[in-house]
Length: 126
Image (cartoon, rainbow, N blue to C red):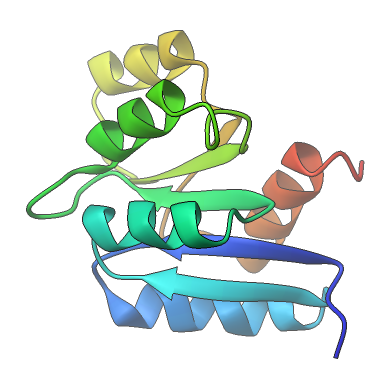
């Protein structure tokens, strides 16, 4: 099967990766999963995706550290990143996201339509 896009979902909760896969299957989008920042960076370097869905709150290496490494890597810095945060994000975190220049963000728990709109936006399909 040929997919219209390939997304890497980096989240320490396997259920989130599964949910994202289910939501995007109908859009003909392939979702690869990584359950840690280190695993996500390794997967991106092996096979760069069209976009990354990146959880902020992860043990070991949080989403901001992953994002910072991506931006420092010439092979990865062009990949659009959608940050995923908990709904109770602080004002400081929202400002930091804006300054960091992430492509977009969604808050957990997210609605399927919010995720689809965000991806359409970063993949240039709106």
